[in-house]
Image (tube, rainbow, N blue to C red; front, top):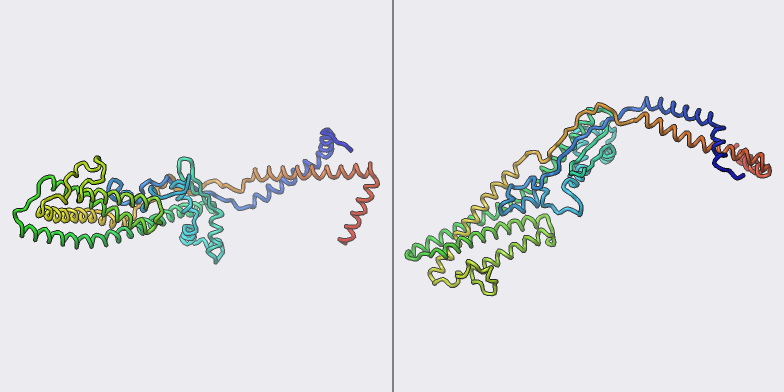
Length: 398
């Protein structure tokens, strides 16, 4: 009973009418059924990649630039390998938090005929597609039986993404504002004390004055103290959301240590410090005459507190602005519109697929029939055993 390609082809030709008839019957049945299937429409919207410093305090060139980038926007966020800010947007869009907001905003629990939020969220997500392109552009697509509702729900996802971003940004801005507010309150007291000390010393020693080099070093020290205060504020805010081992926290600590090192050079001189680091600091405050040293320290403290107070006031006002900022954080490239053409059912594809399957199954069936026929004609003993087994099975079913 060896068979070659021509034998198989001969079987197909022999049963060609059955194969074609089955194909036509299945195709017609599937085509008719597809006419009664409800159409589905897909609405799409595209979002531009997040801006690097979106939502920051606008201090990228100032002392708190790193703080704003790290917390109030996506630019400085620590992301996993190969992840981008667009991937973060996509993850937020797929989150349960956003899904629940979309369900509530569009009354989808009633539409999905469920009283369970979990069930509604699962149904919603099954109709949602979020993709990130090579350029970082995010595509949000949603399928629904109603084209207008499809567009409405799609745009709702973008609106809720923007709402979540604003909530996070405002929360972080509030945290920053409260932290600066506390430091500003203490700085006001320190500034008042420094003013009183300087005034009392000047009244007691009217003839004391400072030379130009000491004045320059006082200004430089005040600048360093201001940077130190800002750096410590940044570190305090970082510690609220990041662990002590985080790279950003370690970098900030190193920055603080370097500023303190420069201040020690001003106070004690360049002993043990490379000559390049000591340029402009060759006369430390500790080597000034007694009264001059005391006046320099009072003047320095006054200058430092004034500088810190000025910087903190600026940051405090900007933090308040950021906290009350409600401008959109998501840049929409194309807003979703009601689609005009359905995406499914794809009737032609359904008919073609069903027809192909019918041909495959029919060919298998005719080959099986031909195989049984050959056994019956060429091996009657085997056919008798098969008939006996078939009769036993019929008896069990009867």
